[in-house]
Structures are given as structure tokens and as C-alpha cells.
Length: 119
Image (cartoon, rainbow, N blue to C red):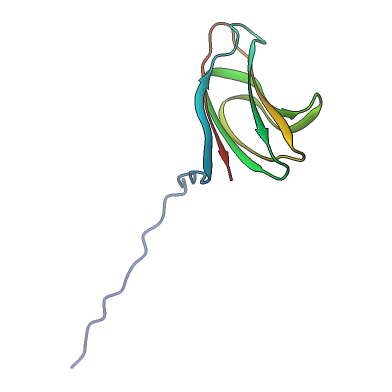
């Protein structure tokens, strides 16, 4: 007597996988409205401790020229160029204020939805 053993066939998985949602403590989820026009900008400021790992997700109505994450006058922690949406992760090098700046690349009003998480 022979038993039939079913074979499990693996189906091909789609090449496009969903991006994992970052975990961690939600710091802020809000909307920022840069000043209207080309080069108009808005800022969000938060204080962090040395060594904090932070994830920023953003999504704008219109293209942004840049998204900058700065500490102090010149210390650039992360940046994105010419995009409407993206994810940035950075580690804070020293305790203090971190500035996130959204800079418009298009004329007219813009709205940037963003989410900050501490990893």
C-alpha cells in the first residue's frame, strides 16, 4: 500500500515587497506648511539626547527641493533632495536641539505630513 504524500509548491513571491513600518516611540505626527513659493520653508524643532536614533517619514503635496535635518548651525545629520516623500534615519551626535527643515521646490502652497519616531 502506497501513501500519497502531497507536495507543497511554492508560488513565486512578488518582487515588490511592502516597506516595513518603523517601530519605536512616536514623538510627533503632524503637518507643516512651508511659506508659499519657490524656496519657501518651514521648520520643526525637537530636543534629543546624545545617541538617540530617530526615524523621519514625510509626504508632501508638491515636490520639495530639500529636507534637511540639522543640529547647530552647520551640522547636517540627514538630507533628501528633490522628492515628494521619503524616509530619513539619523543618530543624534550630541544632546540638544535638532531642526528639520522642509524647503519648497514649487510655487504656491504646499503641505508636508510628517512623522517622527525614536527607534
